[in-house]
Image 1 (spheres, one colour):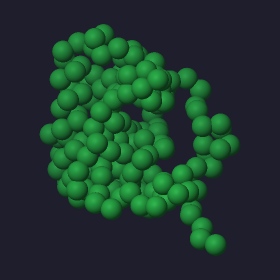
Image 2 (cartoon, one colour):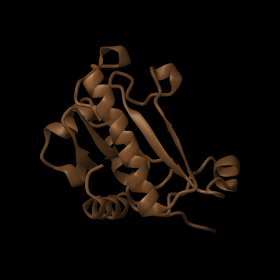
Image 3 (tube, rainbow, N blue to C red):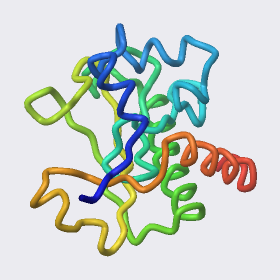
Image 4 (cartoon, rainbow, N blue to C red):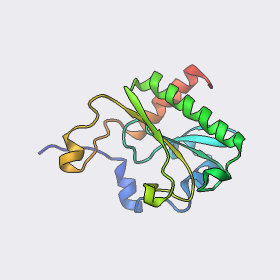
Length: 164
């Protein structure tokens, strides 16, 4: 029998998967960026690793403002989010060398949003061959690196390349 190790999933199992309150509001209010996987804090928005990633390096970008609606965001906030999207793609490209990206947002639960009340963008690195039989046959995705290792690697690369 093959074993797939995913020790970071235990927190999800024990806590029922969802922290108390909106993660995009609660986590930035705390001074625990590494624990909360917050990589970068901007003026109006921030970048964090997805705790339940599709692939290693799966980032999310969210405004500090709690809203589900894009039209509630000012031009200043939308511009910063787009700059953070560009920077996130550069960061992952230089650090992890993916072959491509999926970038987007899910507006509402019916569209697939896990946190439908707080708009956020996803940046998912993709590699040739990153889809294999596991998701198709076993409904299982293998993430080959721990979240903390990915966080540390990306944080180090941020220090090397500086801000965009």
